[in-house]
Image (tube, rainbow, N blue to C red; front, side, top):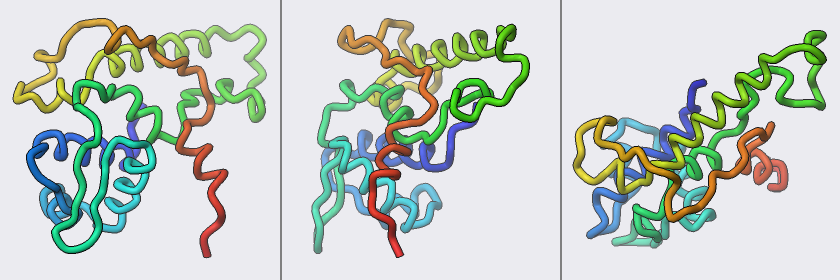
Length: 172
């Protein structure tokens, strides 16, 4: 499974903001720091603001900053909100499944278990874990989900971002 560039940018924005909590961060600064398009970053920032993860200030001297404590932002929740599709195999989506093996196949169950494990690991890490100055993944905690919150079921064909896009009016 590969994360989309959109999710990569989303995580980069959040991590950068978490490392610079003491001040507002600008789109220009993020674009230069990460070598990313300002247009793509604006889309990411708008989504993060709608989700309540960052707050933005317009105008001269404006910018963005986290609106929540990094320790309360689960990486699994961020990935779920920014990815568009978690269907690892065709049979994950019953509306388009045309696989002839479906009645007897156990592959769907294997991939479903793998996806649950993937999100269990992501739900066990917070933005604070990724930005607290520790150098590598070996420093991440091996713990249950944050604040006793259970992981959200992941056997879903479409993410919340796709649903929001479907509800949004078409742009010309």
